[in-house]
Image 1 (tube, one colour):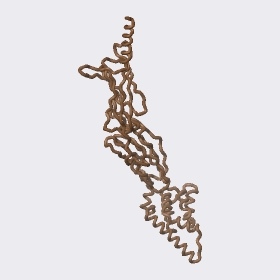
Image 2 (tube, rainbow, N blue to C red):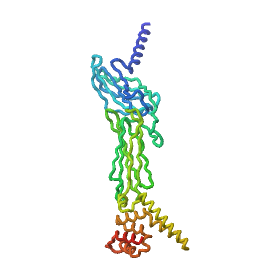
Image 3 (cartoon, helix red, strand yellow):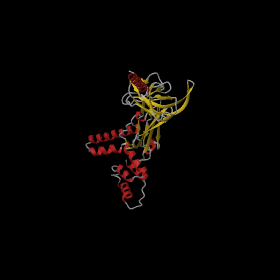
Image 4 (cartoon, rainbow, N blue to C red):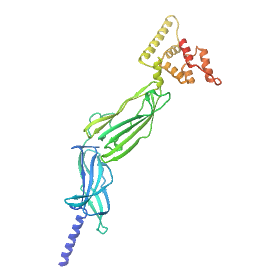
Amino acid sequence: MVIRAALAALAALVLLAATTAGAETPERRLEILAFPRADSVVAGEMVPVTVRGIYDRKVTLEEMTIRPGDSFDWVQLAKDDWHEERIDGRLRLVVERRLALFPKHSGSSRFGPAEHRLTFVGAGGKAETITSHPLDLSVAPMPDDPPFHSPHGWRFAASELRVKDELSTDPARLRDGETVTRRVTVTGVGALPAMLPPRPVVSENWLIAFAAPVERSLELTPEGPVARVIWSWQFRPETGEPGVLPAVPIPYFNTVTRKVEAAEIPALPIGYASFAASQSAGIAITPASLWGGLAAGLAGLGAGTALLVAGHRPTAAALGRLARRRSPFRRWQIWRAARAGDLLALRRATEEEALDRPAARAALERAIYGPPPQPFDARAFLRTLRRKA
């Protein structure tokens, strides 16, 4: 009977020890504390969290882990902070681990629990595990207010979004054949790099574009993570006509104003300086010059009609040559080749005009194919073409 009572008492002690080994006590406890910056947290918004442990004895070894889950993305902002605090009149050892949590979806989301395995001084090398309660958060869906709409379907949250646009040269006044490099840096405060949107697609018929690999980086600060993405392109006009890349809005949910806002990559005009210079020379492709070219074409059509009435039938090739010679874009091509000293391009551009100018054509071909040096006066050549036009 005595033996049975002793065994029962021993079993009770073992059960009590097993029950309290991983539980919190007033002297040793671990907790997860959330500090949301708004009453209603939305999906993707950063939630500052501190895992805080309070212990009554010095620690020789320790390891803190957080049970994995699929409800949050998270990142640790700094090294664990170990210090002493006076709590309820007694000096205690405190550890704090600061995290930034990002709920992946709306609804009820659970984070943790955290487990802290410790070896205390004087415990004979025996480890003890302290376990916290999990953190439960109610998460609202990301707002779908404009400009969160097609084609800008990418959604993310940040307390601040900055756009920096850098250019290697003036894109509106490129030298002939020159390339401009555009580097756009998007910085999201309180966001992770993967949350920032993908690189905008640049596709224009008048533009040759080369895109460099995307660069993403993360900076950890006491206030939270700062994410950056860098997009780089090289642009070169494919034709002589200037063009404009439209502005690109980047919508996001501002966690400070609690509104959907947008930062913007500004519009970018791209063109050759020679095109702008040709305007001062009177051969630019402007609305006036286009109407002038159209009028010239109509005049040529009228001349062709007059020939038909008079009994002459001009060929389609003759009418085509007349229209091409009066084209303002063709005149700009001729002026550009002459200005650049590109004699082969000048020969191609003036092939039809030079058919009935044998002397001018011969001078140009001698300069191209004759033994060097063969000086060539491009301005005089153009004056000859204008006199014969």
